[in-house]
Length: 85
Image 1 (cartoon, rainbow, N blue to C red):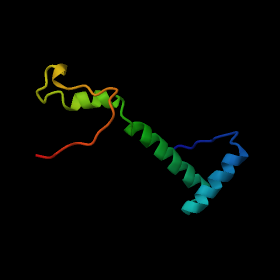
Image 2: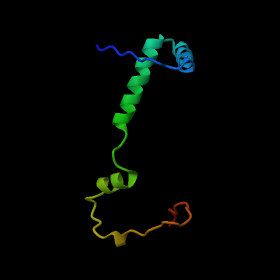
Image 3: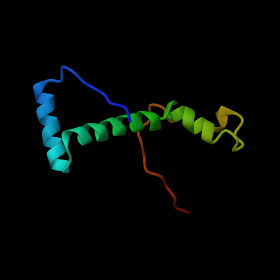
């Protein structure tokens, strides 16, 4: 396993880290490892494309060929769906 030294950490950050570690029942060292793991995994899991691009990719093969088939609601107030007969 690798070692990492972080210098010039502000006293306030160190103190908060100590508090977090205590609240989680861990050493400061283990708390830092958990924080780093969470930060790296969150970055890896974040989508690379925006929501619109992901929606287009997901439904690309559903049969819609002309964007005119989809009514645009840009600038309109949101309203609830009507599922009645």
